[in-house]
Image (cartoon, rainbow, N blue to C red; front, side, top):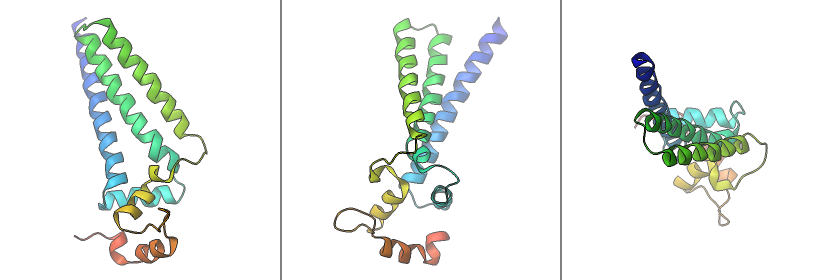
Length: 149
């Protein structure tokens, strides 16, 4: 029985770690200009990963792992059942967000990483849409692809 309890706490800690890692990757892609973030944005732009999954599904998936780990800790330390129910319901809510992120529908523009990038670099027009001409000119620069800062 003791070995089973150790496995449960290990899985809970791994789940929390994966949740934080997934959230950090999503944050880097959406809000930073690092080399890795540029790589992830380019992969999303080429259709290798759905833009909706990257914008909606990835953070939802990270939250599912984080909450799953927290649920494991709640059960391991035998905390009140209401906490387990809250965590389980939250997991179901984020699971629905994850599934919505897999749908081929268009979300508001501010949800996507390319719009966030354009906003950071002043590449939006007066209507807050991406100015494609300015974006393409900006994307053609060497430092757009190779950030040697």
